[in-house]
Image (cartoon, one colour):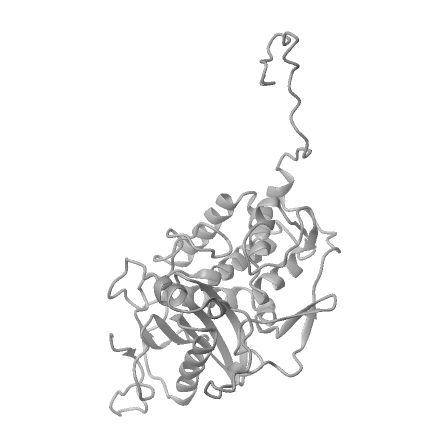
Length: 371
C-alpha cells in the first residue's frame, strides 16, 4: 500500500503531518479545493481506473457545451433510440421512440445514473455512439485530461474506457467553473416520475452537512467510485474516491476526506492543473474478482441500501426520511431537434421488399432486391 501524498501544513511553520490518523486509502483518491484548485491530498492520482458512471459527467459537460453553442436547448427533444433502450440497468426503461426534454434527460442521467438515458443523449447530440465518444475525447483533450479515454457516454465497462482521479478533478473543475447554472442538478435528493420516487445514489446528498454533488459510478471492474463535493462557509471541497468496496464505504471514505479537508489549514502551491504525473500511469486495475466474484449479487449494485441492524451505525446506511423530489417525465420537448439527430435518415420499420423468385428481376435489380 502506498502512502498518501499530503500537501498541506497544519499551521504555518509547523511540521507537515498527514490529515488524520489511520491506514491510507488503498485506491486512487484526490481531495482539492474547488475555488483555488489547490490539492489537499492525493494518492495514485494518475493511475488509470475504469470510470463507470462517472463517465456521465463528461456526457453532461458535452451536452452543456452544446447548449452554450446554440446547438440544442434545454427543451430540445431527446428520443429514446433502439440502441439506447436495450442498455442494461441502471435505466429508466423508456421505449424506443419515446421523447423527453434534454433537461429532464440530464437530470435522470445524473440522479438515477440511467444508462439508457445517457446513451440516448449521446446518440441524439452526437448522431451515433462513436461520434459522441469522439466529442467526449475531444473535450477531455482540450481540458488536459491526458489519462482519459471514452468509448461510450454511460460508463458501461470497456477496457478502452478509462480515466484517473486527477483527470476527474479537472473535469469537475470545468463543470462547476464553466456551467455554475447547472450546479443544483448535482445535489438533487431524488426524482419524481409520476408516483415513482427515485432516490439519488449519492449518499452524501441530504446526509453530509453542506453536500452539493456530484456523481457515483459502479461496474464490477471499477468497484464503487464517487465524486463528492460539499460547501461550508463559502469554501467548496471535492473528494474523488475510486475502487471502494460498497456504496456505503465510498460515501464514508469521501466524507472522511472532506472532514479532514475542512478541518485543516492548507498552505500548498500544488493545484489540480499543476500536479505532476507519478507512479503507474498505465495498467488499469480490475476489481471484478473482489467485487463480483467474492461477493453476493445483492452487494453488486448502487441501489439504495437498507438499514442493517448488524452493520456498524452510519448515516449513509439510512434512507432519507423526506427527500425533496424534482419532477421529471416524458413530453414537453418543443425546442429544436439536435442537428445530428435531424440529419439521420429515418426508415420505416418494415421489411425490405424482395423480388418474386418466379419472375425475372428488372434491369439493374438483383434477385435480392439490391440496386
